[in-house]
Amino acid sequence: MSHNLHQQFKKLFNSEATNAYFSPGRVNLIGEHIDYNGGLVMPCAITFGTYLLVAPNTEGKFRLRSINFEEQLDIDLQTTYTKQDKFWFNYPLGVMAHFLKDGHQLQGLDMLYYGDIPIGSGLSSSASIEVVTAFALNELFKSGYSKLDLVKLSKWVENSFIGLNSGIMDQFAVAFGEAEKALMLNCDTLDYQAVDCHLGEYLLAIINTNKPRKLAESKYNERVQECQTALAALQTELDIQNLCDIDAAKFKQYEHLITDQTVKNRAQHVIEENDRVKLAAKELAAHNLLEFGKLMYASHDSLSKLYEVSGVELDTIAEYAKNAPDVAGARMTGAGFGGCAIALVKKNAFDEFTKGITEFYTGKIGYAPSVYSSLIGPGVGVYNG
Image (cartoon, rainbow, N blue to C red; front, side, top):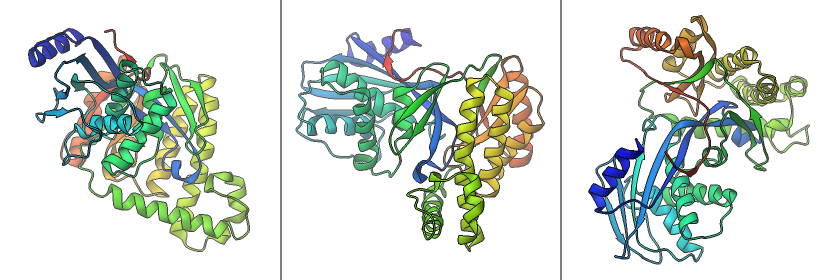
């Protein structure tokens, strides 16, 4: 991979790359749809990601190329940049805009990107591009940002430059990820704990439904509103700021305050899911992968029945996994309505699992999923491969 990328760089820019970087994608192991409710999430970095090769040029230009996309950008050094249509290079361009906004001096660079994250799969290819660009510029121009600064900067790119109203989990996970560790993160305070996550004889199977994701944004906003409605009802008798300020036992005492059953279901999922994240941290730290797997199934069941963000595609994957030998647990990951599911599968059974789930899913859905294997890898850094 590395050798080929260096060859491509030389072919495109007629010079050798001087620096190389890598930033991973991420999956959320457990803790879904609770980041906007003051709760805990548990993402980890995966071994797919974005590679960036760089060399300075003397032309005072940023020249951006990607092996994945045809669109190219050659742009002069300016005092600011604005978004250009919907091209991939808006993500690095937004990072450059933020560096300039903060008063940092930049110089001309030739930049080649290559990503092996499946596009549109919900594995955070955009956060991966943002963070690898920010990390590279910070190192090359000695800008003095901390890793947390780079996370916040990348979130600003996503929210303000690109215009997508997402949280901070993706950028945080790809920046702070550690090999064989999950990050138990409070999205409000950004306090986190790295939890041992030794998969042992298992690996992480990532199953992309290959379903186009069209409804996700409107439904996402609807769920946020329903959670706010539930919180307002509970606040008539409880002094809380977020749904996740209480546990499932306390919710049972006060759920009568929520009169709409759908809204009550949403709150129940959020509060119980937050409890599951805490349990998951304990089970992983104790290397109880089978117990962690049960929590994954419970999480999926709740997302499907109480929160209603799954769908027949993701449910089909969970159904197959539950009945397959050599699978410890499975669940949808991400916003839902398509995207990906994850499963803990024994390494020596991965090929058999892939064949079985492809046949089962295709028979039910009418087209095939894509199945990948990953370990839990490190966050952004210099690439020496």
